[in-house]
Length: 97
View 1 (cartoon, rainbow, N blue to C red):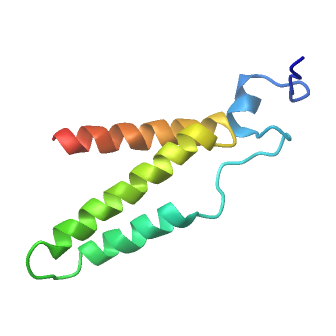
View 2 (view 1 turned 180 degrees about the vertical axis):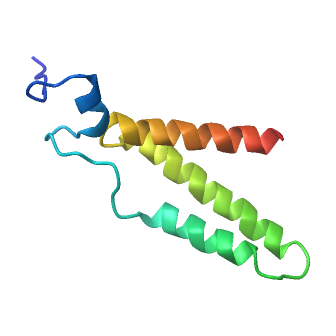
């Protein structure tokens, strides 16, 4: 038999911002993909010769994609999962523009 865990007196607003233990989680320390995205994005803005800048930019987008995917699949609440969906959508749209 499966056990269902519920937050006491939960409503949709509570489930959007609270984790399974009832803690409000909006921000958390950044993990490796987010740090790598920021470092590579800043590095891509430096004056490089040739396609190095473009390579750093593509790599930074890849790390941001990984972070967004991880938030979507393993986010602690609906807010974090929605953030993952939003970032994945923006990345996908920006790829085709």
